[in-house]
Length: 357
Image 1 (cartoon, rainbow, N blue to C red):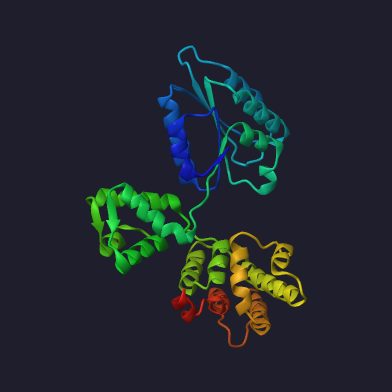
Image 2 (cartoon, rainbow, N blue to C red):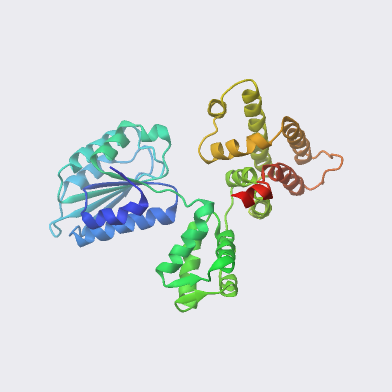
């Protein structure tokens, strides 16, 4: 049985299953989902808890199996937790997990909770994960998308009796908050809790939020790529400044930007040659959020525009390697910003289209 994190609480109120698997890379949301299961287990009499973390190829899986089959003299029920940080249990681990899943069927005195990172499709298609999915409850913990972050913040504020003003002022406040905590959901949670300590329940003004919320955003080059293709120029500038401050390698930022440009060129050429766009995107390994962005921007990017961007990427490559380029900044990060904005401005939705929508 598969559930989303939004469905988990309602599920737990209806009764516990004997096997739960959480997988995802957002620490805060994984922790909250695990805590919800632990609280429900404690209320149902699972008062003893044993925890195991797989720490390498020499991990003793027999200890986990023994813990799952043993009972305390002082507790009627136990919660068995297994954390696999790598998401790769190995051959012995796969067999042990399958056995744990099979044991869970009909078990009344042992509840098993398995914690995994975000899993790729191949791992989700493995036999051991299939056993967990078919014999228990699996919860894929999805990260909060950047576009959904202001609403997520508003919901968390509402849960503690606080809110922002309505209309444009409130949207400005939430957007400011989201900008300051982007990519760092745990920090966002802490900043929201801080607002509860600083201010009474009720409406929060922009100045109150601005004065209390720190700049704790974390950026990565893959999110930068999405921001460029989405045409969010201000966000692109802010992310580049954040990446520079965090010490990210210029060469990695350049590779990400130039690879997007090369991929756009290849897909454009394939479509011009008669290839269906979905097929061309799959052949270039473009899927998920990037696939939707590519579908949106490709019609408005001409071959000449992409050729100019590709030439600019070659020039920035030289700058990063220490070569001077005519009419280009000498500073690596300034050159990267110019390259990113060159593509970003071409990916923007025209103002007339925005008004129509």
